[in-house]
Amino acid sequence: MKTNLSVNINKVATLRNARGENNPDVARFALDCERFGADGITVHPRPDERHIRRADVREIRPLLGREFNMEGYPDEVFLNLALEVLPDQVTLVPDAPGALTSSAGWDVKANLDFLRGVIGRLKERGIRVSVFIDADPEQARLAAQAGADRVELYTKPYADGYAADRKEAVAPFVAAAKAAIEAGLGLNAGHDLSLENLAYFRRSMPRLDEVSIGHALICDALYLGIEETIRQYKEQLTNE
Ligand code: PXP
Image (cartoon, rainbow, N blue to C red; front, side, top):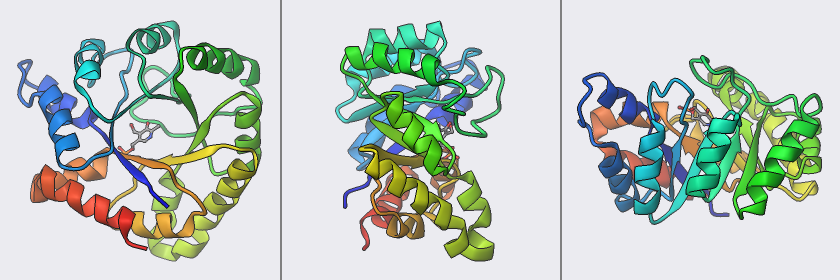
């Protein structure tokens, strides 16, 4: 089973924005992540542009050689940007515009028609669409009904429960993954995955196409450097 590592570079843009100049250079960082072995790059352009800006997305897109994943709430600004730059994958997340970070998956049932419409527009242009959901088999089945190609499981509850009882923490994710696979969907995961909890998560899952990791990975890079950090995350994803 191959699991791709997509590096979320939002934090690098946050650091750059702190001083208003171009240090660190987000585009160069993205390219270096690819050079050091990342299978893809994830960005989450938020409406207030407090980290990745729409201009970054336009700059980075043509430079990248691997998977480009754009995640966010699908308002018209986000959708138009996606339809302009044509990422390999769009991950639809339900966060409110001012949210600090994603904190729950979609209520797919309540948003079925909306999601169906959005997914149709993106897929028409050849973009793979992943829907961010909680570890709930019913949400996975509904995401398939909405036309999604994949689901991304929101892994914070797993990360929070890992130290106390990792077997119990991962169980709902295995159940949701099985439902997703039965419904014909691919499987991504993200949020609070780290060098500590990643290998066990992957080993436990019946399938895992991609993890997208930002916060812990960038924190690790402060101590290890980005090249060594990516090497270590990739190692977690290749050990059986
Ligand atoms: N997946 C989604 C949908 C997210 O919103 C985020 C955070 O931007 C991540 C994955 C990555 O989470 P973390 O930064 O905790 O690794």
